[in-house]
Length: 268
Image (cartoon, rainbow, N blue to C red):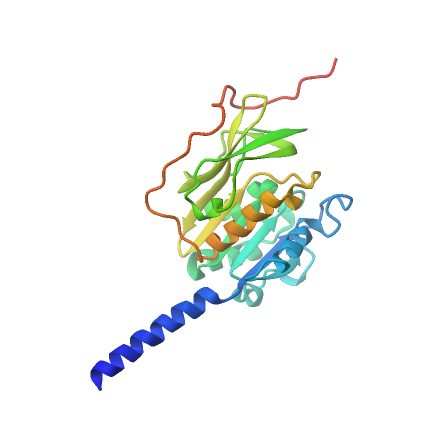
């Protein structure tokens, strides 16, 4: 009887673990809703919501700065596996209490957090990383960027190959954040700059992903490659996928020939 009880316990534990893996990933898509409506009619959060609704295994919801408790009450976060955050013009309008809730849910409860593009200056990212989140310069010159998959073994890179974003805003290194545990993508421009484009950290019980591309004046989050990237990042941030211990960085793309602040040349 005792032996049978042990086997039953093992079966129940295995069943529970399998059920957890099969659960829908609950995604909260947050935006301050300052994105141009001619590019993103429902904001970047709306564009990604439509994508997640079409992909099996995700349960997306939307939230905004104007929502009660900034859309991130404890009750909401208790029902969230990953928050995907886009902020740009209203970082200072996010209450400190909302930031504290997010940090607590990430570090103590294992919630994932994904910061998109200009969210490098968001209060949650800066609080989670205890960093300024600043790049050396920001220039919206609308030129193409080549994105290179430099860590193809990481689950965030699954199904991705090198791709080009037709129009983008350039940020330039250095990026003032702690050393990430992995850099999955890097980007290059004709200016000679080369950046880290997708960085990840484990923070307490939770995970954080920063995805640099995504300037709101361009339809970057309608691109299939970017949508796959965000979906893969969501699975990793939710703890549904795990990176192998020994990964080899892929040498791809030209080396940097320029660094530091970049200024757009004046037209003659």
